[in-house]
Image (cartoon, rainbow over all chains, first blue to last red):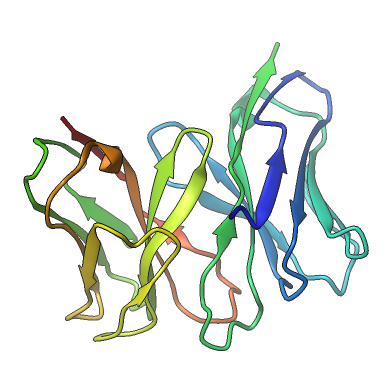
Amino acid sequence: QQQVKQSPQSLIVQKGGISIINCAYENTAFDYFPWYQQFPGKGPALLIAIRPDVSEKKEGRFTISFNKSAKQFSLHIMDSQPGDSATYFCAASIFPNFGNEKLTFGTGTRLTIIP
Amino acid sequence: NAGVTQTPKFRVLKTGQSMTLLCAQDMNHEYMYWYRQDPGMGLRLIHYSVGEGTTAKGEVPDGYNVSRLKKQNFLLGLESAAPSQTSVYFCASTPDRLGNYGYTFGSGTRLTVV
């Protein structure tokens, strides 16, 4: 059972463009939504995270938009660069976890930025 | 360097063989996790631990066992390997339940079962 659905599976964006990756969740108890970035041969690394008390969080060129009523959140990468080429995972968990300390990950999006 | 270290990095097993994957962290993190990564399926949780001496099942625990005898180590065992266990395995740790620091992942173990 996939509790966090991620799309698209792969994405090609031109350098300087905006990359957008979407996720939808089912469990209304989820209230912590991080994004992880993974380069080939490496483990994922935390990129940015949001909690549902805000609708948007921005860190540099990366922005998370959150729509609680639609149970959706998305990652926007502005001015995309070749160095952003990686696999991106959204995730969700209950915060704080009260004994359920684990993240549920989406299926990943392979992003390629072309010159 | 501080972080999460996984050994081995690569391994080829024959069906029915057993092996143990080792995860070691030197950050004094309380929580540790084992995930498997398969194409098109993302990261799926196998087992996790919320402290020394404790373990719990994740989403896909069948065919795996774990132990957390020391706080810094989290072992993943395959008793009788099957081709369906061919995957990339990631260990992760985090210091607190509040999620403030995210997960620190190791660089993975690529396992092939033939």
